[in-house]
Length: 358
Image (cartoon, rainbow, N blue to C red; front, side, top):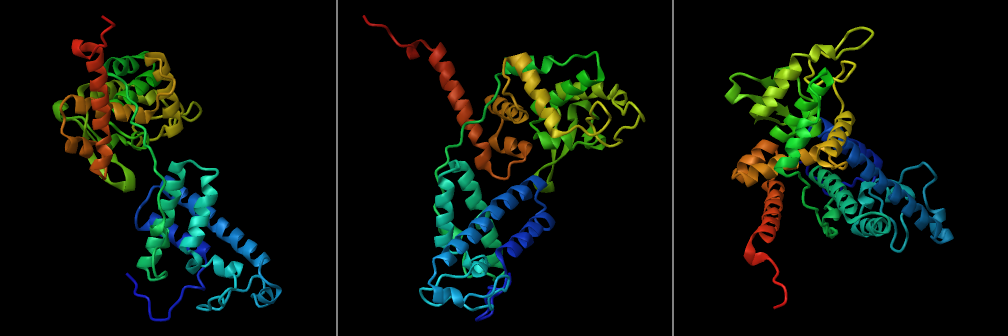
């Protein structure tokens, strides 16, 4: 942590420069995924645009005398020079990191509340907090102004999942006559049997699968933040992968015959299969097998966790299997199981049935 020297100010550092350094830090040091970095970039660039627009609006409303003292366009203010009392900051000053005060941030949230859902606002506040926490550790701001913001209440919906019979029906839909059908069956069984994220499934290499001995089969998964974990492979998933591997070589570029030598799951043209393609396939098989055209790969991950919990698995073991950093994330499935149990009780227990009028 860099200690700020007495009197040292970061007025010469623009918000845009700070954001660029923060994104580099996320990529190089925190090893955040490109999707995470892209989300931070969108949210923080939106904040920077708001700060510039706010500064321009304030400059237009300043007295003529105050405007005459503003620095020439394109000229940065002198580092450490704060605006005089009652004088609005120039656009350059307002987009400096020191210009990110709680009043500006609250104004930003007020503008977001008119067009964004609470979950989106909470994510954007999180991005601002992370940026200012980074700058505070480096001694570039005195305090994290975003920490004073109140987060909107976000009602997180319970995870969607399939019951055991519906999950089995979805697994049975892909045909065994083609290499693509065998691949699809293997992907579905792996998503459901191992509880993988779709990005983890697509990132699997041939060398990540340990098939021997059969009762100890496992797959090495590279999850969020490039964290590795070992996940057991059930007998159904292992059998489906082995059947697919017997015909994997049929998936190749029709012109050159080339195929990705490392990827476990290949596209029709021999390249590593993509996330969007897997999502489309899961949606298709969900509609055919369970009447669920809204089925997505993450729902199969939810289904895996819920069925494990219903079967008596320990919550900590499920957390490790899924690669959750926080147990609180895994605990969401306890609510799903309890809700399901109450529905079964209401439908089956004679004391739960509503009696008609005597």
